[in-house]
Image 1 (cartoon, rainbow, N blue to C red):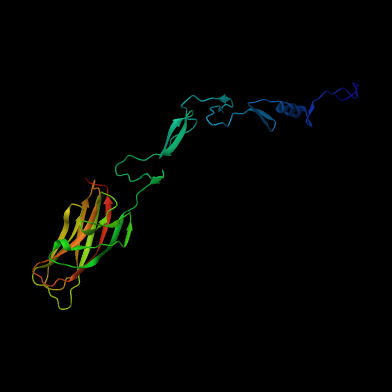
Image 2 (cartoon, one colour; image 1 turned 180 degrees about the vertical axis):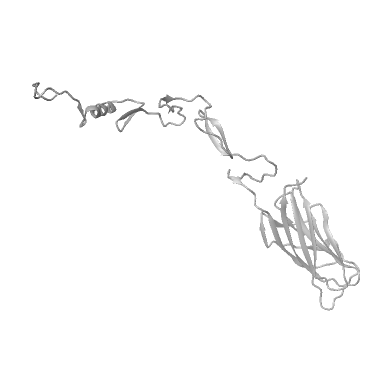
Length: 264
């Protein structure tokens, strides 16, 4: 209180707290004596919702205290390519929505992220092979020069194969070259046969050449579906016409491409 009560210096009653006077002093006193559930900042006294996990208390759009009912979205809205599951009480899970449209290649990878399989292909060479009339001895040894997708080379049933990384539809091609020795001339009739074969499927494609001159090469191409095959693979072989006494060595190259979903 200040003043002496005279007309020139009337009594003045006021509040001073923590170095603050007037309303600021009152707020400073209230803030220092506020209990749990309240906060005071910048001269404003307010309800303080807890930050503990699972707390449903929040401030509503009208500024009042609000507790949503179980299952309320609390403002979360699903949009394109996004799914939201769960509720306010148990918690939400937000994930990517994968289309169920046919032929969709996108899926979830082993790490939980979105995954689109890349193209799978491989190409390589085949060793030089001196062919004979014994077809069991005429399997050529393939090698892999480049690939994308997990091809491998292995030996089974006495000959070397290319293991395909997946079942499904594959397109194969191969070129065989017969590099004859000087002065060699093929007699009338087929010099040799060439074929691409695959697991349990026999000869998928074969060409017969009839020439009386040097063979420079021939192509085999085929497409086949390995739906459900446990170990899809391919291998290569050649066979000489038994009428030819002289049989030059054969070399070649090959390639394989995964062309799409299984058609079976």
